[in-house]
Length: 317
Image (cartoon, rainbow, N blue to C red; front, side, top):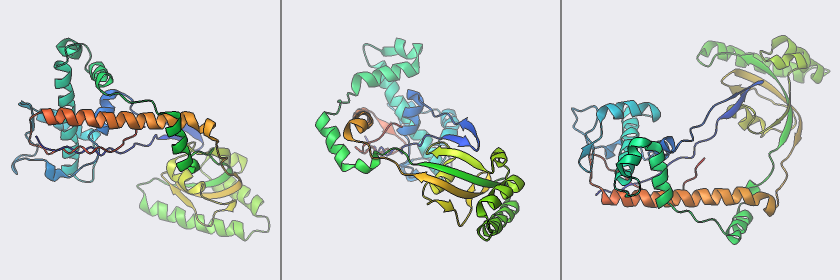
């Protein structure tokens, strides 16, 4: 039996607002997608795949059962990676993990073939519930975590922002260069105006591709999580006033004026405790899941791939 390493990445929740309307991107929540993505994430060293140089897809076996190559090919779409070889490793590893869980379901007296045939994902979920026990964190543990990570538990800052969107498509390189140059020119025009605020409003109405142009570019009061990540990651670090350079997003270039900024407020322990308890419980769950999968792998005969499971703490997003 080869060693296994488990190094999943936390996936950010892409709830975004496309300025100025809302467009939430759904995040997978099913046990199947969690297992296939979280357990196969990273560890993308394709040298761990043992395949003939003549084969495009590896021959991998779990307890004598070959992982279907067509299934590997279909799984590839769920594992974007820098190289084809890395994606191939991630996809194959995900299917190996699923095969291990399937075998465990079939060998479980209370589940077995009937549970698998009835609902594969529910069977896996029931199997994990039976074998992964995460202890509820005690109050002392939560309080100690709070003291060590107090700065993480603040209300989000609130900002009043207005912008001028000079729109261009992401793939149009020449257009984006032109819009960037224009953005800098308009910033200088605003700065040099006798009435910068009035100038901003006028330019927003004249040039902005955002419907907020009718309100002089005002987006209202923003808190983190309301706008696209590339916009807020820059804007929420800004001080009050006109930004000296434009903010680039998938939509183009934004000339940004922070009209007001209220910093986040520190939460006390009782306010932060529910979030801390949930976070530590999820951490314990993933540690237990790592242990369980490691045990399954140790008991299995896996050929054609070298998987390595580390005992790292993982967070379910």
